[in-house]
Length: 262
Image (cartoon, rainbow, N blue to C red; front, top):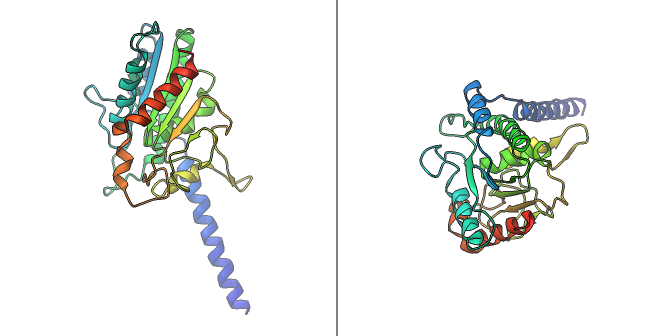
């Protein structure tokens, strides 16, 4: 009996230690590179626009060409342009945030958690500097997948500097949050479960959403079959389907226009 109790105690200690170590590793702050910080600092001082969309691409999306913020964010930007066309409101400027993505390890995006901590710091720096320079600019932040997680993690630091936030396929999604648009997604993320540990507070022993549940500035979208933001593996391709869902894009654009008062 004593030996059995000892084995269970050792096993539990190992599990708790591994969990604590994983959480510490996930939340380890990582700084953006000096070259990217300098670039974003220069970008923040460019001329102001009336409406700016800060776009953050998903994992694996290349920061090249006209879609440097990813196809889903770009599709939303086009939908917002259409929603504002013919109004007195100015057309939105799209600024793709050049946050860095670490290379995959043996084909697995194991370092996404560190991309998120570094990217959230970069987003905070840019949004703060942009607001200081452009007091009258309406700023909307839009992220997809890894980019959505960056925005989610940065929200407490940027909430006073932005006018609206959109999240598509967020692996740090909190099911049932009041800011979530109900698309039938179930439960905690399947493939994003590891990133969900970033929200675990060891002091309270609970998961705590960085975004207040009653936030009126945020809308989060998780398609029903998306395994990155919801509990489902039946249709992994849905994670890249936001760009093709016209109803969702129109709904997101309507939310933004209402929120920013256009």
